[in-house]
Length: 168
Image 1 (cartoon, one colour):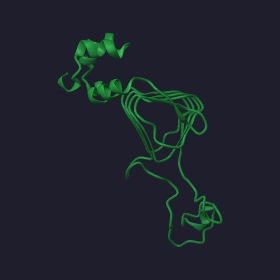
Image 2 (spheres, rainbow, N blue to C red; image 1 turned 45 degrees about the vertical axis):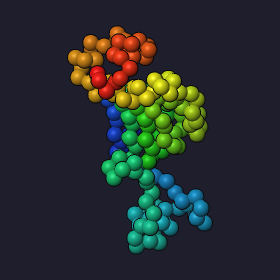
Image 3 (spheres, rainbow, N blue to C red; image 1 turned 180 degrees about the horizontal axis):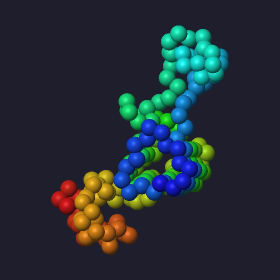
């Protein structure tokens, strides 16, 4: 992870490449209420006052009970990316520089833009399924070292390992 990253309550997978100035944005406001101000839905008094004794909305979304964002394995996130809370980024995904991620990112997809959108998939559907079953990032380092020469081409890796990743 490079400098100036702010990723509170985030779970980061193995072999991720995270450039500088990546930020998880915590908090949201109701967009269909008369006011978006937290004093109307939160008892936390973020502005030093509130109308609520008890919060009726959470200002943040979690992927599960513990994490605001979950980043899969072998994910590359470009610089100055903003990720809203409650987002899951799938294994092998790439997020282009400057993107604002507002919805979940599929495994082995490339997204970019504001808000981010799917640009393309890194591999064919068949190769993505293969890689999802292979889970090479869970291998022991010795095994990765044995096969890393084939990582530059998924077809070479499949040829070397066979088409049944569960047997590897």
